[in-house]
Amino acid sequence: MLSRCYQGTEGRTHYREMHFTWRDGVWLTGPSCGWGAHSLWEEGMGADMSLGQCGMNEANARREAGVGPQSVGGGYWYRLDLQYDGTAFRGWARQPDVPTVQGALETALGTVLGEVPVLRVAGRTDSGAHARRQVVSVELDRHLDCAALVRSLNALTPPEMCVSACTAMPIKFDARADACSRTYRYFLTTAAVPDPFTRRYCLHVSSALDMGLLHKTAELTIGQHDFRAFTPTETEHVFFHRTVLACAWSCDKPFVWLEIEANAFLRQMVRTLVGTMLEVAKGKLTVADYQALLEGKERTQAGPTAPAHGLFLWSVKY
Image (tube, rainbow, N blue to C red; front, side, top):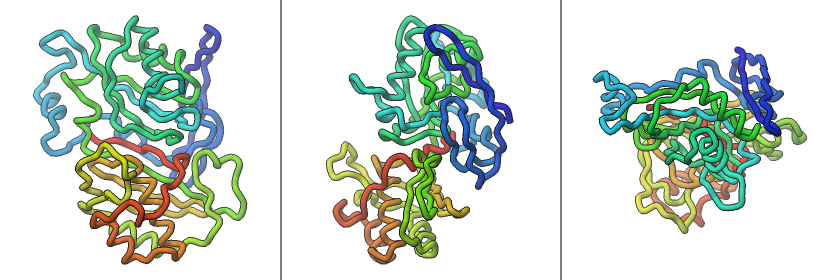
């Protein structure tokens, strides 16, 4: 597969191409849209680009009814698909005086459009976390050529991020509210020594892990639970129940990764789940301890929060 990316530097636009081989279990190294190293990429990457079937999803209903991208009021809705290496950013959300993904995208959009539109995002990633597939929705007051917008944004955004697609959407498409589920992956390496080429994208674990125990904790996580033990005590959340649709550990030595899909996630939920599961795999907690945490225990009873650099927002379903 051929990947193209535009990167602007000092007023010039540079064009880069890289050829990828898609296969789980293969680490792809080398730059593509600013990525220094790629994680266990899967086949069918484009399968989650379009709106899927997800119950009574309002955006799907609008599309199936033949409603185009223009609203009665004259607005136009667009979907932007992003990838980014989170190492360079303090998370998604805009903050003063620090680099963020939202800040970089808004700056580029402001340059192209002459104004900064309101953005809605599928998942607000933490500082240092990455995205293989982030989705942003935006309403504009004019029709734009999607291909031209992608080229312009990639010329103006940092090399650590890439706008991979722009799609005209049905009226009032909301990347956050219309999402049916999000999937995250967390990557580990159990190599004897740390790998300098993957250190930004996976957590190095030197101690032995019991994969059987990891599988048991993943199985217990599926379903609806009270996840308050897996989010910071000081939080804006008031409802802590979430429904995990799928959760499984995989291994292709020396790499180990958790893939988890849920209707929504609490802040730092995936990272704390990983940190707690690793405590079980190391024998510091029991499977029974882990199961009890899913019933709404205090945060202090769960394990540590795993570092952000191993976490990827992997895909979003609509």
